Amino acid sequence: MPLPRTRRKPRPSSAPNALWGGRFSSGPAAVMEAINASIGVDRRLYAQDIRASLAHCSMLVAKGIVSQSDGAAIARGLKRIEGEFAAGKIRIDPALEDIHMHVEARLKDLIGAPAGRLHTARSRNDQVATDFRLWVRDAIDRLDRGLAAWQSVLLVQAERHAATAMPGFTHLQPAQPITFGHHLLAYVEMAERDRGRLNDARKRVDECPLGAGALAGTSFPIDRAMTARALGFARPMGNSLDAVSARDFALEYLAALAIAASHLSRLAEELVIWSSPAFGLVRLSDAWTSGSSIMPQKRNPDAAELVRAKSGRIAGAFQGLLTVMKGLPLAYGKDMQEDKEPVFDATDTIELCLAAMTGMVADLEADTARMAAAAGGGYSTATDLADWMVQRLKMPFRDAHHRAGQLVAAAERKGVGLAELTLSDMQSVEPRITRDVFRVLAVKDAIASRMSLGGTAPKRVRAEIARWKRRLKTRARS
Ligand code: ARG
View 1: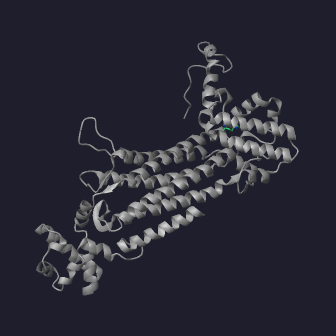
View 2 (view 1 turned 120 degrees about the vertical axis):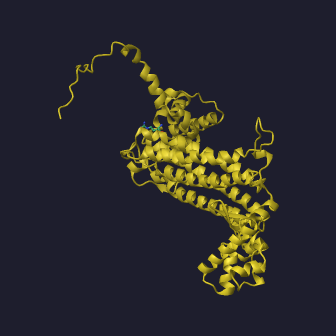
View 3 (view 1 turned 135 degrees about the vertical axis):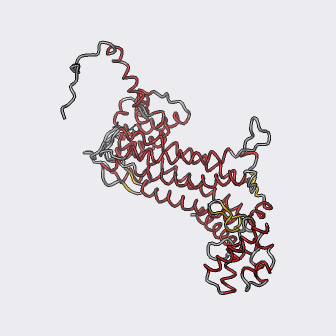
């Protein structure tokens, strides 16, 4: 196929554009500054940046790369800058791009020429990777404490409601009666796995990139083990290219956050449903609900809805950074500067969600009467009826299931619950049924019978609560 012919000749690229060339020559610089500066975000790394610089400086002195007196001046200056940052006294200037350049520029103001020696044998690439790992490691430790507090609040309510009957759902249809305490313990388990994921990620965060230089290492006789130790890292990273370009530690952290947020979101969704008057199973306190500007009766579960929504934002942070990283050639690329915003935002967001859920559940009130009534609704003990026929009449489960189904249909026709059927109603479906069957049809009995490991019987639930309490206590001590 012949190529389409262009009618006009392309303009020579070297010729300046007569219309807007002059005006634009200064325009892009301002935009460049806007797109290039990260100080608005990475100023949050100031404490980590200074800490890492102090460690680097001591090592340079110890190895004779920087003199004692210059090292002392640098260290004094850095400590002063940390105070200035903490007090909000540092002037932010987008022309200085990022936190590293702000610290260095201020150091130069304070101590003059020796400031220029701090950047010996390092680059902003290993510097930022180090700062960021220090930040994420602290965040993991904070979140671990937050999740432990969350577990404790769940346990308090679980203990209060170890024997409180509620409907257990599948497909959001009444399935089998359970206890509210058992339901809450499910979230204690999830939080435990969230802690496990974070602490597992922590092991891989806990390696020190400092000293990798821009990408290839350095010719100075540095001691990387020394800086790693000073910063509390388990070890220096083994490959300089990997050290400056790896961000899987941040991805792993965000993935763990996204999963943890999804757990909070599931309970938030349940709170929204349960607190709706149509369900009326729980009442959220005034502190966690809001009214309507038009409908005076409303108590909206806004906090729970927002926890549900914000889990999307946290999952988005993970997806966003994964997309930034995928396909980046080694080693550092400026793309990676986009790593901090999602991590900071997801961290702030999950901390807020955790605090909100902890507060909401702490003063949650269960309507135990409605829960009990709902627990028995929807023929929720039909499985117990089938199980009785298996155990007492030695019927195969499939046949018992069929018979129990016919009994549910009979009850439905009569407009009563299973326990309200008469013995002769029962026997017309299965003649071998005896009065003994009524022992298993009550919600309380159905719940108490589920003594299998991990089951909902109050006795089991109480034992689990005791186990969790011991476990949280020993963990807190270690
Ligand atoms: N602000 C940069 C970042 O966060 C620091 C590293 C800059 N390195 C560079 N080669 N330009 O990624």
